[in-house]
Image (cartoon, rainbow, N blue to C red; front, side, top):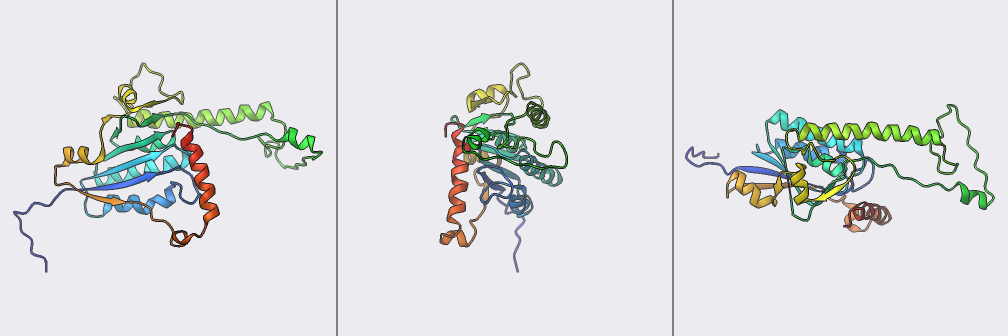
Length: 265
């Protein structure tokens, strides 16, 4: 039996959810809606938190997964009437900024990298290498666009035009999301959506973040010195703790390292 004393005030609780890494579906260790759903749900529902704080450190990745994760955060925030605060570590760029802007306010370290509001598609072309080696590429399709952007065939201008149209459409979705979430805060005179990125001080001037602050001091400022932080994060799969899946882990780490390296990190 628990004795309840009405004169004892409960300490306010803030759920802290760490979102670190590249954003992708089906890649072990990456951020995806499927992998994060249980943690996000728990952060909003367990212990009646006063707020949810997101610790963000992501160079981006899949725009679809970024949108799904951000939408889940917003649905729960609106349903539970719980404010969301984002705290950026090294970087919140591209899809990482998409996640950050799901919060009601965004805080960062002075050296954090913010922005890269754009969409990118990268690949390679190997048709000349195959020709030099005497290898003939044979492709049969039903549907004239089925072999669009085949890296083993010479690039076709109509394929590039089609891809750029898709990228522009996706970019528009990204821009709409940022404008909606940062309404009234953005510098309307600045070019914010070119894919450029900035350090936190300049990002604050542009309205992309709300200020320079770190997690614990800011949460104490907002919710009092006795605020309790309930931390949530992903655990490594059981077998990976004993060296299993080493090759997959290594490849994923190389890919993630390359994503961070785009921002000099």
